[in-house]
Amino acid sequence: MKTATLEHVHDEARQGEVFLIDQEKQAFSKHFYIESYGCAMNFADSEVIASLLMKEGYGPIAQPENAQLILLNTCSIRDKAEQTIRKRLMHLRHVKNHRSGVLIGILGCMAERLKEQLLEEEQLVDMVVGPDAYRTLPDLISAAQEGNKAVNVLLSREETYGDIAPIRLNSNGVSAFISIMRGCNNMCSFCVVPFTRGRERSRDLPSILSEARQLVDAGYKEVTLLGQNVDSYHWVEGPTATPITFAQLLAEVALISPKLRVRFSTSHPKDITEEVLQTMSRYPNICKYIHLPVQSGSNRILQLMNRTYTREWYLSKIARIREVMPDCGISTDIISGFCSETEEDHQQTLDLMLQSRYDLAYMYFYSERPGTLAERRYEDDVPEPEKKRRLQEIIDLHRIQSLESMQKDVNRTWEVLIEGNSKKSDAEWQGRTTHNKMVIFAKTPNTQKGDYVQIQITECTSGTLKGIQVGEKIA
Image (cartoon, rainbow, N blue to C red):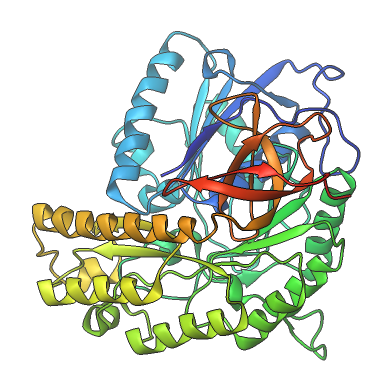
């Protein structure tokens, strides 16, 4: 699970509607502090929330101790995520108790799942706000200030926040998220997302392109198009218009600037199309990287999960990706120990990993979530020690595959987008290849953050490439 705080809004004042903050020129009498947990969508939502709050006169602040409004934008995908947030809320309650007038709000998926329970039973927060209710934050803040119940967890079939210019939180000034759709129609039996984020709805194409252009004008070099299932993107301008598909959207964003890298996440295996693969292949600035969650290698388990594909179908999709783009990076999600999973099912997952040869994987053991189809239909009958043993075998295999993937790049040269200083040394840059692999290399006098450079890979670990710059930076 990822978490981040608002340490700064941006490195410097920039032009364009997306960047509204120059803190040295604005004085705020009240401040908000926000922490984001979980998926990239939550981080993108926090940027929308920041925009809404600044219009109400709240300024961002780096420490909760000095904020009048403390917000946690939460994840509910696993029980561990919720327990982490509960502990954080208890700590923040102590902060509130030492200062008058402070409000604590919980937002996002955990708020949607637990609703008023967080107010009435546990009294950990003053406001509970679901993912589709952020526009009502000003009214909810006023209600909470007056001591009234402040809850809005209504889901929407229309809300996309497409008209709101996000405030880029914790931005490196190089990469940014653009939310293209919300919700999910895939009723995977293990997943709580359809219940916490509602039905799929796609954001209008003009607002997406406008946001991307503003980012380019502001100096950004990479955007990631976000959705629970981006391949389901479907927008129609009017009753007689031809629908815009995800492949067409990808092409439109790529055409904004050849120096704008375009990424996307996440794809559902059943929905990623040949048109998407061909579009990725056609445009050099669409990154050659696909996150394609498999969850299990067993057909029986896939059916119980309601994934609507077989292992054979999935492997054929992997093969086709590599036919169209031989160097394409592929990552996945894997769950060990789903309901009734046997050792044979587990071995089939390991076998699928061997055939798929993933560059990156996000691996978890199954955590039953209240309200999901699996919780209502199946018994969570795999003992936790067995779940963890199987997970460890998955992790061990992936480490081998990840190292093999990295070793293939040694002695090759790749274009790298510089994202900033290496975490270990200010004398080194870090950046990513088109395949989403992290590269570390020594700084040279003529390079800066946001530059494209050619890097010859000289060595690697299972998670990082290391190299040297070849030639001058790319204009």
